Image (cartoon, rainbow, N blue to C red; front, side, top):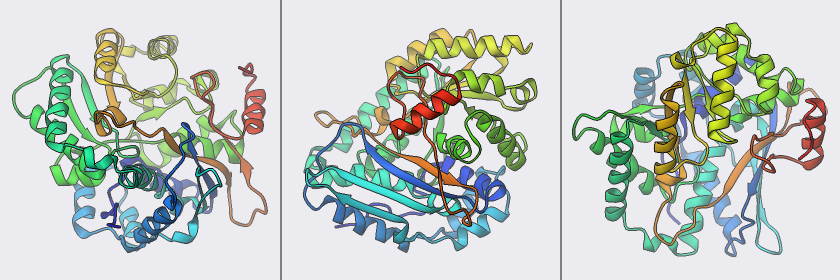
Length: 402
Protein backbone atom coordinates (compact mmCIF):
# COMPACT_ATOMS: atom_id res chain seq x y z
CA UNK A 1 0.00 0.00 0.00
CA UNK A 2 1.17 3.53 -0.75
CA UNK A 3 2.70 5.59 2.05
CA UNK A 4 0.09 7.90 3.61
CA UNK A 5 2.32 10.39 5.48
CA UNK A 6 5.08 11.54 3.15
CA UNK A 7 6.31 14.75 4.78
CA UNK A 8 7.78 15.35 8.22
CA UNK A 9 5.73 18.53 8.74
CA UNK A 10 2.46 16.94 7.61
CA UNK A 11 1.39 17.54 11.19
CA UNK A 12 -0.30 20.15 13.37
CA UNK A 13 1.82 23.12 14.41
CA UNK A 14 0.92 22.69 18.06
CA UNK A 15 2.71 19.34 18.16
CA UNK A 16 5.95 21.15 17.30
CA UNK A 17 5.37 24.07 19.69
CA UNK A 18 4.50 21.68 22.52
CA UNK A 19 7.52 19.53 21.70
CA UNK A 20 9.70 22.62 22.02
CA UNK A 21 8.14 23.52 25.38
CA UNK A 22 8.50 19.93 26.61
CA UNK A 23 12.22 19.84 25.86
CA UNK A 24 12.65 23.27 27.44
CA UNK A 25 10.76 22.46 30.64
CA UNK A 26 10.40 18.66 31.01
CA UNK A 27 13.31 17.18 29.03
CA UNK A 28 13.35 13.80 30.82
CA UNK A 29 9.59 13.23 31.06
CA UNK A 30 8.17 9.90 29.93
CA UNK A 31 4.56 9.36 28.85
CA UNK A 32 1.96 6.86 27.72
CA UNK A 33 -0.84 7.47 25.20
CA UNK A 34 -3.90 5.38 24.35
CA UNK A 35 -6.21 5.34 21.31
CA UNK A 36 -9.99 5.60 21.69
CA UNK A 37 -12.62 5.08 19.01
CA UNK A 38 -15.72 6.73 20.44
CA UNK A 39 -17.93 4.98 17.90
CA UNK A 40 -16.55 1.54 18.81
CA UNK A 41 -15.83 0.90 15.12
CA UNK A 42 -15.15 -2.62 13.87
CA UNK A 43 -12.15 -2.29 11.58
CA UNK A 44 -11.52 -4.44 8.49
CA UNK A 45 -9.46 -7.62 8.98
CA UNK A 46 -5.76 -6.87 8.78
CA UNK A 47 -6.18 -3.20 9.64
CA UNK A 48 -3.75 -3.25 12.57
CA UNK A 49 -1.09 -4.88 10.39
CA UNK A 50 -1.58 -2.28 7.67
CA UNK A 51 -1.36 0.45 10.31
CA UNK A 52 1.88 -1.07 11.62
CA UNK A 53 3.32 -0.90 8.12
CA UNK A 54 2.39 2.78 7.81
CA UNK A 55 3.92 3.56 11.21
CA UNK A 56 7.11 1.80 10.16
CA UNK A 57 7.21 4.01 7.05
CA UNK A 58 7.34 7.07 9.31
CA UNK A 59 10.94 6.06 9.98
CA UNK A 60 11.79 7.19 6.43
CA UNK A 61 10.80 10.79 7.22
CA UNK A 62 13.18 13.59 8.15
CA UNK A 63 12.68 17.32 8.09
CA UNK A 64 13.94 19.04 4.92
CA UNK A 65 15.87 22.27 4.58
CA UNK A 66 12.83 23.76 2.84
CA UNK A 67 10.58 22.89 5.79
CA UNK A 68 13.07 24.33 8.29
CA UNK A 69 13.43 27.53 6.28
CA UNK A 70 9.64 27.91 6.08
CA UNK A 71 9.16 27.40 9.82
CA UNK A 72 11.95 29.84 10.63
CA UNK A 73 10.29 32.41 8.39
CA UNK A 74 6.73 31.94 9.64
CA UNK A 75 7.30 30.80 13.23
CA UNK A 76 9.86 33.24 14.59
CA UNK A 77 8.70 32.53 18.15
CA UNK A 78 10.32 29.06 18.00
CA UNK A 79 13.92 29.19 19.30
CA UNK A 80 16.64 28.30 16.85
CA UNK A 81 17.99 25.36 18.87
CA UNK A 82 14.74 23.47 18.29
CA UNK A 83 15.44 23.09 14.57
CA UNK A 84 18.70 21.32 15.34
CA UNK A 85 16.66 18.86 17.40
CA UNK A 86 14.20 18.34 14.53
CA UNK A 87 17.03 17.78 12.04
CA UNK A 88 18.22 14.85 14.12
CA UNK A 89 14.78 13.51 14.96
CA UNK A 90 13.73 10.07 13.66
CA UNK A 91 10.54 8.15 14.34
CA UNK A 92 10.85 4.68 15.86
CA UNK A 93 8.16 2.04 15.36
CA UNK A 94 9.09 0.51 18.73
CA UNK A 95 7.34 3.40 20.48
CA UNK A 96 3.98 2.12 19.21
CA UNK A 97 1.99 -1.09 19.73
CA UNK A 98 -1.14 -1.84 17.69
CA UNK A 99 -3.54 -4.77 17.61
CA UNK A 100 -7.13 -5.76 16.89
CA UNK A 101 -9.19 -7.77 19.33
CA UNK A 102 -11.39 -10.74 18.39
CA UNK A 103 -14.26 -8.39 17.50
CA UNK A 104 -12.09 -6.26 15.19
CA UNK A 105 -11.77 -3.21 17.45
CA UNK A 106 -8.51 -1.32 17.11
CA UNK A 107 -6.07 -0.73 19.96
CA UNK A 108 -3.06 1.58 19.84
CA UNK A 109 -0.65 2.31 22.67
CA UNK A 110 2.34 4.67 22.59
CA UNK A 111 5.08 4.90 25.22
CA UNK A 112 8.42 6.67 25.44
CA UNK A 113 10.13 9.99 25.95
CA UNK A 114 7.57 12.79 25.81
CA UNK A 115 9.81 14.86 23.52
CA UNK A 116 9.92 11.96 21.03
CA UNK A 117 6.44 10.47 21.15
CA UNK A 118 4.64 13.82 21.09
CA UNK A 119 5.11 13.95 17.31
CA UNK A 120 3.20 10.69 16.71
CA UNK A 121 -0.39 11.42 17.75
CA UNK A 122 -1.69 13.53 14.86
CA UNK A 123 0.17 11.53 12.23
CA UNK A 124 -1.21 8.22 13.51
CA UNK A 125 -4.76 9.56 13.70
CA UNK A 126 -4.50 10.90 10.14
CA UNK A 127 -3.18 7.51 9.00
CA UNK A 128 -5.99 5.61 10.74
CA UNK A 129 -8.66 7.83 9.21
CA UNK A 130 -7.35 7.69 5.65
CA UNK A 131 -6.45 4.00 5.87
CA UNK A 132 -9.95 3.12 7.04
CA UNK A 133 -11.53 4.70 3.97
CA UNK A 134 -8.98 3.00 1.71
CA UNK A 135 -9.62 -0.45 3.19
CA UNK A 136 -13.42 -0.17 3.21
CA UNK A 137 -13.55 1.36 -0.28
CA UNK A 138 -15.19 4.64 0.72
CA UNK A 139 -12.31 6.60 -0.81
CA UNK A 140 -13.53 5.60 -4.27
CA UNK A 141 -16.50 7.93 -3.76
CA UNK A 142 -14.37 11.00 -3.03
CA UNK A 143 -14.96 13.63 -5.72
CA UNK A 144 -12.31 16.25 -5.11
CA UNK A 145 -13.53 18.62 -7.81
CA UNK A 146 -16.94 18.80 -6.15
CA UNK A 147 -15.24 19.01 -2.76
CA UNK A 148 -13.26 22.06 -3.85
CA UNK A 149 -16.48 23.80 -4.89
CA UNK A 150 -18.24 22.81 -1.66
CA UNK A 151 -15.34 24.10 0.43
CA UNK A 152 -15.16 27.34 -1.55
CA UNK A 153 -18.80 28.02 -0.70
CA UNK A 154 -18.14 27.33 2.99
CA UNK A 155 -15.35 29.87 2.86
CA UNK A 156 -17.55 32.42 1.14
CA UNK A 157 -20.25 32.11 3.81
CA UNK A 158 -17.76 32.46 6.66
CA UNK A 159 -15.96 35.41 5.08
CA UNK A 160 -19.19 37.23 4.27
CA UNK A 161 -20.27 36.80 7.90
CA UNK A 162 -17.04 38.42 9.13
CA UNK A 163 -15.57 35.24 10.62
CA UNK A 164 -11.84 34.86 11.22
CA UNK A 165 -11.09 31.15 10.83
CA UNK A 166 -8.49 28.44 10.24
CA UNK A 167 -8.36 24.81 9.12
CA UNK A 168 -7.82 22.51 12.13
CA UNK A 169 -8.66 19.27 10.35
CA UNK A 170 -5.51 17.14 10.02
CA UNK A 171 -6.23 14.48 12.62
CA UNK A 172 -9.57 13.23 11.28
CA UNK A 173 -9.29 14.16 7.61
CA UNK A 174 -10.69 11.87 4.96
CA UNK A 175 -7.33 11.98 3.19
CA UNK A 176 -4.30 14.16 2.66
CA UNK A 177 -5.81 15.23 -0.65
CA UNK A 178 -9.00 16.29 1.14
CA UNK A 179 -7.13 18.68 3.43
CA UNK A 180 -4.97 19.89 0.57
CA UNK A 181 -8.16 20.68 -1.36
CA UNK A 182 -9.57 22.58 1.64
CA UNK A 183 -6.54 24.83 2.04
CA UNK A 184 -6.34 25.45 -1.71
CA UNK A 185 -10.04 26.35 -1.93
CA UNK A 186 -10.02 28.56 1.16
CA UNK A 187 -6.98 30.49 -0.02
CA UNK A 188 -8.51 31.01 -3.46
CA UNK A 189 -11.80 32.17 -1.97
CA UNK A 190 -10.12 34.58 0.44
CA UNK A 191 -7.98 36.02 -2.33
CA UNK A 192 -10.87 36.50 -4.73
CA UNK A 193 -11.94 39.88 -3.28
CA UNK A 194 -12.08 41.95 -0.10
CA UNK A 195 -14.04 40.40 2.77
CA UNK A 196 -15.06 41.42 6.25
CA UNK A 197 -13.79 38.06 7.51
CA UNK A 198 -10.36 36.45 7.26
CA UNK A 199 -8.98 33.03 6.37
CA UNK A 200 -5.95 32.89 8.68
CA UNK A 201 -4.34 29.63 7.57
CA UNK A 202 -4.04 25.98 8.55
CA UNK A 203 -2.79 23.99 11.51
CA UNK A 204 -0.96 21.70 9.07
CA UNK A 205 2.61 22.96 8.69
CA UNK A 206 3.36 21.20 5.41
CA UNK A 207 0.18 22.44 3.73
CA UNK A 208 0.84 25.94 5.06
CA UNK A 209 4.22 25.77 3.33
CA UNK A 210 2.80 24.30 0.12
CA UNK A 211 0.14 27.00 -0.20
CA UNK A 212 2.12 29.84 1.43
CA UNK A 213 -0.34 30.53 4.23
CA UNK A 214 0.21 30.92 7.96
CA UNK A 215 0.64 27.79 10.12
CA UNK A 216 -1.55 28.25 13.20
CA UNK A 217 -1.78 26.62 16.62
CA UNK A 218 -0.49 26.79 20.16
CA UNK A 219 -1.11 23.86 22.51
CA UNK A 220 -3.32 20.82 23.08
CA UNK A 221 -4.79 19.29 26.22
CA UNK A 222 -1.92 16.85 26.56
CA UNK A 223 0.44 19.59 27.75
CA UNK A 224 -1.74 20.36 30.76
CA UNK A 225 -2.84 16.75 31.30
CA UNK A 226 0.73 15.46 31.48
CA UNK A 227 1.62 18.15 34.00
CA UNK A 228 -1.50 17.22 35.95
CA UNK A 229 -0.28 13.63 36.05
CA UNK A 230 3.16 14.62 37.26
CA UNK A 231 2.16 17.30 39.78
CA UNK A 232 -1.58 16.97 40.33
CA UNK A 233 -4.54 18.74 38.68
CA UNK A 234 -4.87 21.54 41.23
CA UNK A 235 -1.82 23.47 40.01
CA UNK A 236 -1.47 21.98 36.53
CA UNK A 237 -2.74 25.09 34.74
CA UNK A 238 -0.46 27.37 36.76
CA UNK A 239 2.60 25.23 35.97
CA UNK A 240 1.57 24.91 32.31
CA UNK A 241 1.14 28.67 31.88
CA UNK A 242 4.46 29.35 33.62
CA UNK A 243 6.23 26.78 31.44
CA UNK A 244 4.69 28.22 28.27
CA UNK A 245 5.79 31.71 29.33
CA UNK A 246 9.30 30.40 30.01
CA UNK A 247 9.63 29.04 26.45
CA UNK A 248 7.72 31.51 24.29
CA UNK A 249 7.99 34.77 26.27
CA UNK A 250 4.46 35.95 25.57
CA UNK A 251 4.20 34.65 21.99
CA UNK A 252 1.66 31.93 21.13
CA UNK A 253 -0.54 33.49 23.77
CA UNK A 254 -3.79 31.55 23.36
CA UNK A 255 -4.34 29.21 26.30
CA UNK A 256 -6.44 26.04 26.15
CA UNK A 257 -8.08 26.12 29.56
CA UNK A 258 -10.51 23.20 29.84
CA UNK A 259 -8.26 20.20 30.59
CA UNK A 260 -9.54 19.97 34.17
CA UNK A 261 -12.59 22.20 33.98
CA UNK A 262 -13.28 25.90 34.19
CA UNK A 263 -13.37 26.26 37.98
CA UNK A 264 -9.81 25.17 38.75
CA UNK A 265 -8.48 27.04 35.72
CA UNK A 266 -10.21 30.23 36.85
CA UNK A 267 -8.58 29.95 40.27
CA UNK A 268 -5.16 29.73 38.56
CA UNK A 269 -5.84 32.44 35.96
CA UNK A 270 -4.48 35.39 37.88
CA UNK A 271 -4.18 38.93 36.54
CA UNK A 272 -0.59 38.48 35.39
CA UNK A 273 -1.53 35.47 33.29
CA UNK A 274 -4.67 37.21 32.00
CA UNK A 275 -2.55 40.12 30.78
CA UNK A 276 0.22 37.88 29.39
CA UNK A 277 -1.98 35.57 27.32
CA UNK A 278 -3.75 37.13 24.34
CA UNK A 279 -6.80 34.99 24.81
CA UNK A 280 -8.37 31.60 25.48
CA UNK A 281 -9.58 28.64 23.41
CA UNK A 282 -13.04 27.12 23.94
CA UNK A 283 -12.96 23.41 23.10
CA UNK A 284 -15.78 21.89 25.16
CA UNK A 285 -19.02 22.85 26.86
CA UNK A 286 -21.70 25.22 25.64
CA UNK A 287 -19.95 27.90 23.57
CA UNK A 288 -22.15 30.73 24.85
CA UNK A 289 -21.91 29.69 28.49
CA UNK A 290 -18.14 29.35 28.23
CA UNK A 291 -17.85 32.78 26.59
CA UNK A 292 -19.84 34.45 29.36
CA UNK A 293 -17.60 32.81 31.97
CA UNK A 294 -14.56 34.15 30.15
CA UNK A 295 -16.03 37.64 29.89
CA UNK A 296 -16.90 37.68 33.59
CA UNK A 297 -13.43 36.46 34.56
CA UNK A 298 -11.76 39.23 32.58
CA UNK A 299 -14.20 41.77 34.05
CA UNK A 300 -13.32 40.63 37.58
CA UNK A 301 -9.67 41.34 36.79
CA UNK A 302 -10.41 44.79 35.39
CA UNK A 303 -9.72 43.70 31.81
CA UNK A 304 -11.97 44.58 28.85
CA UNK A 305 -12.79 41.23 27.23
CA UNK A 306 -13.21 43.01 23.89
CA UNK A 307 -9.41 43.37 23.79
CA UNK A 308 -8.99 39.59 24.10
CA UNK A 309 -9.18 36.82 21.52
CA UNK A 310 -11.42 33.81 22.09
CA UNK A 311 -10.89 30.89 19.70
CA UNK A 312 -13.82 28.51 19.34
CA UNK A 313 -12.92 24.98 18.22
CA UNK A 314 -15.60 22.75 19.72
CA UNK A 315 -17.06 20.57 16.93
CA UNK A 316 -17.87 23.53 14.70
CA UNK A 317 -19.49 23.68 11.30
CA UNK A 318 -20.04 26.70 9.07
CA UNK A 319 -23.47 27.66 10.35
CA UNK A 320 -22.55 27.21 14.01
CA UNK A 321 -19.46 29.37 13.62
CA UNK A 322 -21.51 32.14 11.99
CA UNK A 323 -24.07 32.03 14.81
CA UNK A 324 -21.34 32.30 17.43
CA UNK A 325 -19.68 35.13 15.48
CA UNK A 326 -22.84 37.24 15.58
CA UNK A 327 -23.09 36.85 19.35
CA UNK A 328 -19.42 36.87 20.38
CA UNK A 329 -18.26 39.88 18.36
CA UNK A 330 -19.68 42.25 20.98
CA UNK A 331 -17.84 40.47 23.81
CA UNK A 332 -14.39 39.57 22.46
CA UNK A 333 -12.33 39.13 19.30
CA UNK A 334 -13.74 35.77 18.12
CA UNK A 335 -12.01 33.37 15.78
CA UNK A 336 -12.68 29.78 14.79
CA UNK A 337 -10.67 26.60 14.34
CA UNK A 338 -12.74 24.25 12.20
CA UNK A 339 -11.63 20.66 11.74
CA UNK A 340 -13.64 17.65 10.60
CA UNK A 341 -16.35 19.79 8.97
CA UNK A 342 -13.68 21.09 6.60
CA UNK A 343 -11.60 17.97 5.94
CA UNK A 344 -14.09 15.10 6.18
CA UNK A 345 -17.44 16.20 4.77
CA UNK A 346 -18.04 13.91 1.79
CA UNK A 347 -21.60 12.90 0.99
CA UNK A 348 -22.41 9.46 2.40
CA UNK A 349 -19.14 9.13 4.33
CA UNK A 350 -19.24 9.15 8.12
CA UNK A 351 -16.28 10.94 9.74
CA UNK A 352 -14.38 8.90 12.29
CA UNK A 353 -14.68 9.84 15.96
CA UNK A 354 -11.19 8.90 17.10
CA UNK A 355 -8.69 10.37 19.58
CA UNK A 356 -5.32 9.55 21.07
CA UNK A 357 -4.98 10.86 24.61
CA UNK A 358 -2.06 11.03 27.02
CA UNK A 359 -2.98 8.76 29.94
CA UNK A 360 0.12 8.63 32.16
CA UNK A 361 3.33 10.55 32.79
CA UNK A 362 6.45 10.61 34.93
CA UNK A 363 8.90 13.46 35.33
CA UNK A 364 12.00 11.34 34.67
CA UNK A 365 12.91 7.94 33.26
CA UNK A 366 14.47 6.97 36.60
CA UNK A 367 11.05 6.74 38.26
CA UNK A 368 9.83 3.16 38.58
CA UNK A 369 6.17 4.11 38.13
CA UNK A 370 3.91 6.38 36.09
CA UNK A 371 1.23 8.69 37.44
CA UNK A 372 -2.10 8.26 35.67
CA UNK A 373 -3.85 11.29 34.23
CA UNK A 374 -7.06 12.12 32.37
CA UNK A 375 -8.99 14.97 30.76
CA UNK A 376 -12.10 16.44 32.37
CA UNK A 377 -14.37 17.84 29.69
CA UNK A 378 -16.85 20.70 30.06
CA UNK A 379 -19.23 18.41 28.14
CA UNK A 380 -21.11 16.14 30.53
CA UNK A 381 -20.14 12.50 30.14
CA UNK A 382 -17.20 13.16 27.80
CA UNK A 383 -14.31 12.87 30.23
CA UNK A 384 -11.37 10.96 28.74
CA UNK A 385 -9.35 8.40 30.69
CA UNK A 386 -9.74 5.46 33.03
CA UNK A 387 -13.02 5.93 34.97
CA UNK A 388 -11.25 5.41 38.30
CA UNK A 389 -8.67 8.08 37.42
CA UNK A 390 -11.42 10.45 36.30
CA UNK A 391 -13.21 9.98 39.63
CA UNK A 392 -9.99 10.55 41.57
CA UNK A 393 -9.24 13.79 39.71
CA UNK A 394 -12.81 15.01 40.12
CA UNK A 395 -12.63 14.31 43.85
CA UNK A 396 -9.31 16.17 44.09
CA UNK A 397 -10.90 19.19 42.44
CA UNK A 398 -14.19 18.90 44.37
CA UNK A 399 -16.15 18.43 41.15
CA UNK A 400 -19.52 16.79 41.59
CA UNK A 401 -19.77 13.39 39.90
CA UNK A 402 -21.99 13.47 36.79
